[in-house]
Image (cartoon, rainbow, N blue to C red; front, side):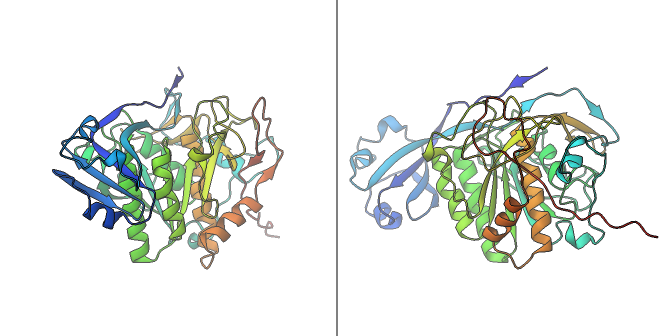
Length: 387
């Protein structure tokens, strides 16, 4: 059974993103009269606040005409967004084998040869690379992980969300990044930053922004090679924080979404800094653009995303199938980690250039989709057989 997941336009009652025309948030905020307001995050050009006020009250005596302020660009309520998967569950495989997607990643042409080669040196399979999964949480006890994921923090619903993954999306994504037999960067460090508010796979934009900023500060402080995978919908309010993470040196991998349409016409929505950001569409095992995948000029690469087998949240040993650009994005995140471990001196821009240079061009049947015809590929040398 297939269930298409759509974006919801629900509103968080008391969190707002106030964007400014000028990069001087602190000075503006100090000169504004905002009572009963807690500042959750303050950046140069925007501030996230939590208040008991409703937006309809922003022009009464509690707030000094914020919407009429010449410096204020906009006031946005926190929107509720869904994880970007197109669900096809029901296939459970206790062995976690028989996954076509890894086979496709290191093969130029079909048919598949049922073979995927990891580097003999474990340090070349994502070692010393930090990959952050901003999602529904991760089952850190699943035996598919060589390096058990680290559970960092929970931004979901102001920390009130269940600590563990009770949905499955995040665990499946993590397994596709670094699972020993389901992922590419099997020796990478996986960190779970939970953003979903409950067990239905939804998250507020403000929680996403706070989570991205949290990871950015970790990266700046520890100086490590860092990748964020976000297999959720985004809004224009999140774009600024994504680009700040990229400017700080990280790589941001983003799922294109599952509306089966060209989403790239909205430049404000997809205007991600391409020096360290990459948008991923989904393909299937017949090298077709998946029927649910978004497409267009802003989609940089396609990766396997249909009928993907990965770690289950409800078991420490079983795997199950999911489909969506959510499943394609982590393969690219894992591929970036794989390549970065082999080229540790590269910047985020250089490592994405290397990834893009290995893409397979014009291999996909695009159908009615338009835009870049580029398929994920890793040029892994096959060793010569011993004499």
